[in-house]
Length: 348
Image (cartoon, rainbow, N blue to C red; front, side, top):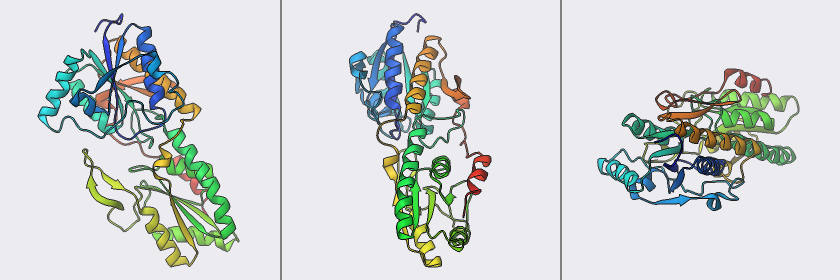
């Protein structure tokens, strides 16, 4: 594609929705039009490219979407490389709609597909997206700051009721493989114990923290637990059901209930559980996430304009940079031990 524009860019959002996606879409359209490209929105992630659900995007379509959560393009957890006919349909639709190149916005699964397509010569650039902030290759992902803000506010609200009723409150937050949301939100909200996948704890350890608080006259406690937390000595992660999505992931959830029941049984303290679930994903993005999403969108178009295909935009320190897709998202980014140690100072 020529570097003076005049090409056609397809853009899609895949995986879980996330505050800040619309900021990326808006920035892509604005920057691309400035450089004389046309932009086509692909509906519902990779599924839209398999089924040919594609529509032009212009200034009017992206006007006013900056503060909106979710994604105006819709999303799905679709793996188009699972069946050969889906992959053929995807490539045929790229040709049919005259899409010279793609911007794929998503997490490890969506960008895993982009990585494979890039290896086969498709002109694609990736934008990392996960509220869990657990992808290697970028210092932060948009949506994370919003999720942490929501968790912090929820903990603030639960504090007052926990104190009034002298209860233990267990708050279950997102975090399949890592505890970034739990640790950051828990630290900001003044949690008394934070349970994360990186650091298994026994139920005795958890109860000891709460009993220590009781012994010094603090008769309520807030325990934050990431959905992927594993109790030490227990083999499997708690799941809602055994159903898998197209990328083979189980539906997590329910660990808060297990922990709450055990705490009440062992300590005798009245314990309640709150599962924040999809509340963490929804609503208006924070100022930080709007700006980060915007910067990512602009950079993605600039990469295409420079002919730098097969790359992912990323944040390094405070600079927007890029790394090859083949090196990005190949492993998980675990919570910094220093952050965990800081949080532990406030346990009990």
